[in-house]
Length: 263
Image (cartoon, rainbow, N blue to C red; front, side):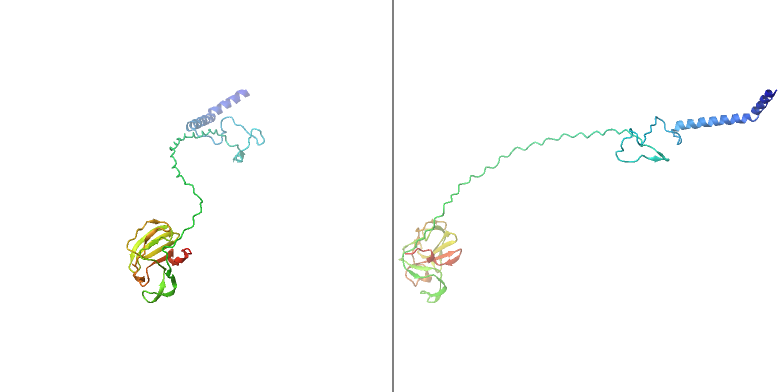
């Protein structure tokens, strides 16, 4: 009798309040099913759900825990230490070197032939030879620092050369080897010839006759005839026939007697 009364009361409860419990359970089941359906469609992950896949835990002292190449400690999230996720790194293909374009060598240019150098002979230079241009006595000496009486003008003045007596039309010889650089008529000293002997030495021959056998550019040796004694030097017409001879070093007058040999 007791079991029959319990079953009757249970059936009354189910028919009364139990209907609402069953309805709640159905609604809850539909809600949970709809939630998972929406999550599967949107792909949203449950923040409280463990990540899928085979999880492996690597302890700090485990042999499988390789050294961190960069020394970066594992990240900590939510108080739980997690190993950094391993990512597959694709190998970087090295850049293929571009083939270099070979440089075509330029055709070799023939070197300019070196000029053939003539052998230099270290032969000592022969000393210069000096001769008297005319044979005669010295009528007037060289004087540029002391005044001397001029027989023609009758006054005292300097004398820039030497006057050597000689007969008219006597041959005048080159004092030394050289090159004739000037032949001209001077208004006071008459027909004049200038010879360059090198090393700065020049000699000047004045009072020659009008016919001069040399010209500028003529090469002469010591003793070659360069003219004849004349009377064309008006400034020295007070003296007997003679040759007026001058000498200069680099344009500065010097005493011609320094180059004339003793006799």
